[in-house]
Structures are given as structure tokens and as C-alpha cells.
Image (tube, rainbow, N blue to C red; front, side, top):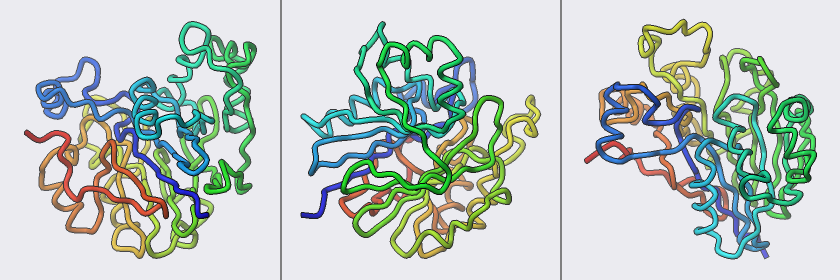
Length: 296
């Protein structure tokens, strides 16, 4: 029997979320007014055949995202997490696994050697390892591992600010389709592999869409928080045999709302990710063409 696999986009926002604390930009004001909370970027992998699910990254929105998976897969086991890196939106949700919260037992945590060392060297994360809440399993660049008989994962190290750890993207492979997930990167020029060579028609890429332009944060030095601009990403990876979905959107990004920038993206054959969108049994993405999350 072919395993029934779904991938759920659990969030699409950059690490600090939307609305962001203390911000009165048009996106944050609108999100508060409409009660919208699209959650920080994360993936859920559900194997309905083997009644198990996994999360990619543990975000500040971990409680809501875990509940979304529990509701989509009633009775399934929370079987593990995969971490991309140690920036705030991608691992701080681990706090909910510990003694003061779920006190979960021996859940598998796939992460790099540097990520494991970071957790072990710093409280309160060290307590998760010492108390047996998580059991780390090392991921290595270019070495695949299996979540189940239905899903394999291939890690790719990518260039991104390494204040604490290295950073990984992941290629998820199902029975017929594949999905490449890269929420954070400094520049596509730094890749040591070609995305075009690992994907085919019908596959999907979920890529860093943090900023549309460098003018979004006039009070910040953008060189200190490098990300490829959406225009660069769309120029490289739209209109390919595979589908391009933009994720990890900063709260200032105009593609959150109906705008000329969003219309341009769609005209180029790309789409903006939306929390709750689902991938079917063959890992083929079904995303709405137009975002509704900030519309009345």
C-alpha cells in the first residue's frame, strides 16, 4: 500500500510573527484589526498510514501548530521534530516540551551537530536533553534519513548567519513528488547545489520570501540581516517545471496584502504561502492562488 502522506504549511511569517510586537506598519495594524495570526513558518508532515506526524522547526507558535496537526490526524503519534537552525523563530517552541509544560518523553529531535551542541550548552534547552524530553539524532549535509516508509528527508546545508549554529534546508520525498523547504538563506549565490537539478515537474519549492525590497526597514542595517529579495527569488525560481511558494515573510512585506507587488508575483507564476494549506498523498501542493489572510 502506498502511504498516505500530507504536508501542512503550519505558518508563513518570519521569526517575530505577524503582527510583530510594537509595530504599527500597515500589515501589523491590519492583522490586529482583523484578528489575523498567520503563525511563524513551520511544516507539519503527516503519515496517515502509519498514524504519525512530525514538525519542521519549533516556533513561538508551537502550541497552535501542534494542535492543528492533532486535529488533522486524530489519534496519530507526535513522532519527532526537525530543526533548521537556532534563530528565534525556529527552535524556541521547544520550551513547550519540557518539565514545565508537556514533559514529553524521548521524542526524536533531528538537528545538526552544532545545533545539538548549542542546546546542550545553554539553559533552559539543556534540560530537555538532560531530562530525557528529547533524543537528538544528527543530520549531516547530503545524507538522507527516513521519517517513515512513506517519507525520506535529504538535508542541505545553506549559507545563513551562523551566530549560533549552521542552517539547513530539506528535500522531502514521497512516492512521486518532492518538496524543497528553505525558509532562511543569506543569498542564493551561496548555494553549493542547483535547485533545478534536484526537482522535476510537479515538485514544489518553499523558499525564503522575507523582504520584497531593502526599503522595508529604513531604521535597520539590512546587511546585518541578509536575505534574498523576493524579486531575486522569483526571477530565479518562478516559471519552472516545479511550483514556487514564498514563505518566511517579514511583517513589513507588501505581499502579505493585495498589492501591486503581490499581483506581480502571481503574474510571474509564483504564489504566497498560506497557513493551513495542505499537500496531498503524492506531495503535490495545493495552495490558493491569492492570499486571503489579510483581506476583509
